[in-house]
Image (cartoon, rainbow, N blue to C red; front, side):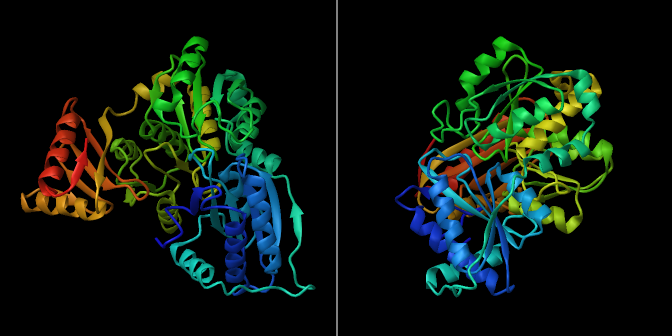
Length: 459
């Protein structure tokens, strides 16, 4: 990871860090990079609903055109639909102007490969080098790029309907409550579900860009009001999305929040019943994924945290599904990135075809107990995690260092991992035995403090 790019693209507060000047410069760097690969490159560009999205997008488009790059503007779309568009339109690259789950004062730029996957680390580094050098290619007046516009919504709808049993959904006619937080999903998910035959009540679907109803991060703490409404309405299922709809989290008919690991496992089970193949997830995801995979005699491969890493492994293995513990699910035959729209449709399809309730489907999954926690620290977080790992290894414990330090027990595990964006250490624990997850959580905190006596820790 370089100085500018994070786990997927670049984000920052407007206008302090990410503004129109930054977008123009980034586009010129990306355009210069692409011109080095192909004489007449084409790029697809879309954005989410943020107030600053239009001006930043136009600056970015201007930078590409001045570099001799043709642009297909797909307008306001969820990130997975821009990624889908890149693949279908056979472009050479892409960009999404979005800050995903961050608050409204943020914006960002996600750069894409021609197939829609997030730009590789190697290519990001090359773009960043050009950005920092300021040595941009500028086309002649005859060589500037052209801009066109394309509506990809119906194309995506048709691709989704080819991949699901629309008759089963229409026959069940499920009642679905959606909460899009005023993000890009508001322009897609309710209409798609209604097209498939669902009864839909849409919350927070005004796309003003203020995210005034709730924070766009669909965490349990941010969904308290939504949960109350869901409990009063008693739908078959409820779904909440983040600002760019690459993730979806779910609630039961009585408004209970469901952890992303479980909904990922539910989608995994349904997809594997249709088509068997490798499954990819991260070291932070529940072992419930492995248990479901065993039912279908397929392998699970674990990676570092981050959908780019998961997607890359899916491509390498020819995997059929991938995902993360936060509710992000990747369907590589549709789009090479997390898709909160299609994951919602697949769960609705599972409910419809099984003729069971959402709660019944969840109850059939293997049982695991989890704690997801975080502690604040001051100092070098990654070094602190390595000290924790070294101590545990010296005491004879099995420690997986794929991403952070994951201590393996017979009936569970605990992961201690430094956040890449915040001054926190994430601590996830899990066990098959109720109560053991708390024991592993407390053990990890105690050992972390023991290994880092000079570090200021706020529990």
